[in-house]
Length: 561
Image (tube, rainbow, N blue to C red; front, side, top):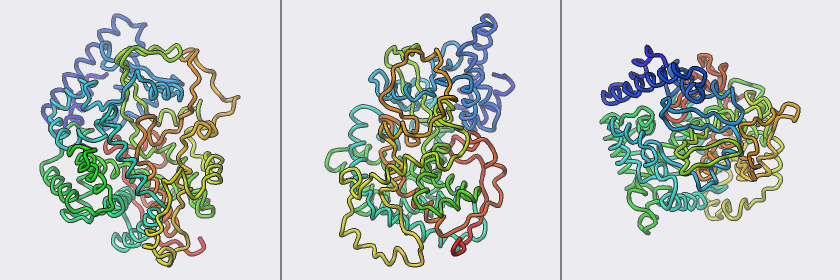
């Protein structure tokens, strides 16, 4: 770690927060001094400390240390095919393991020797709690987030909240919802084109589209306390502050209080808020669990869904061959988005970590007690041992699995989860769906075809040929053969898989389809973003925002194109 870079690092993490700046200064100086002392005496035995130094050096190359984490890990992990293990903060820190092997991921996520934790709030993360305390972020988290599933990742609280989430998803996600999402996206895009004029920021459009769709279809709520632009700003800054270790500005907090109080008081009877309120009144959730999950749902959906919409649209705008193929074959949309999610996952690039409650091993890999296992989908998705040409976008990579699922899925997908309600169907006149439209909403069969959860489906995904397979290294020698092949994890893995992924896919896929059915998007300026390596595409602030804006214009699609 270069001592000359420390002031820049402090400025970016701490900003105007003096406590944060002091804390980071002490931490950086301590890390640098200990590492230099250690390596001066043990020059031939850098080991995990050396790799921690490499990562910290990579982190300081950009304008924001966190923004370069993905790129840094890709650079360091290039030396390993199965995992990266470093020693945080030099000699005396905990072991930090980044798995690149699907068997190791499955072992950790299923074993009772590990527990998921939120590094900002958990008793398993004293350093994280110290940082939030030192920076004043703890009071914000306690007021708005600690009762939510985002903070309660394991144990009875998590099970109780997941049960309510699954109950809502089973009740709400249907073919009717898919139709409503498609029609809503069509109408939004038509109004957006008229209102915004000839040029706009693509991610901004995706955020507004998903914000209006979530407010209408998920929350059954009409904005009253602020504009749509302010709603998006509240959601962005309310969640982004966790990455900057400081609470939002006073005016954001005040508007946030007004917004959520009005949402709880005035949302309709058919939405997410009403469902969770009912669970609270029935004693299934405490008030904090109810209220904090409403806030977290707004924060997370306003980041993951726009991101999941942005990259497929950007790809189609950038590559006319992909756009033409998707338009000519409706079923290929699911194949295409599946591959896009492998390269640009819709959820956070850094999943909530696990901690080893006791000593463990996986093959010859020793895992000391207290080790942190940090699962990152991008490290598995870019592993050449698991994927043929992992850094190349292959539109047909998922073709065989998707089409096999489509052919086997019946109208009543997975029990009664997606049975249509006849009375609800009557509320949508089919003439409204097809008026001036050449295509209809995606079927629930198509949406469900993206959820590769069974072992045989994961195993059927594209792998390198045996000739190109890299021999298993001694680092995982004698590792047990996993019964699961979870190497495609865009929505999380194991106990941490997103409980609302079906709902998210319904809105994202119909949003993308509505745009490519009716519109052409022309990229005016992307500042070279789409020509960079994929690991250099995002900022780790509001989950995974594109590194820079893409300026576009939208035009009505020519008939027959």
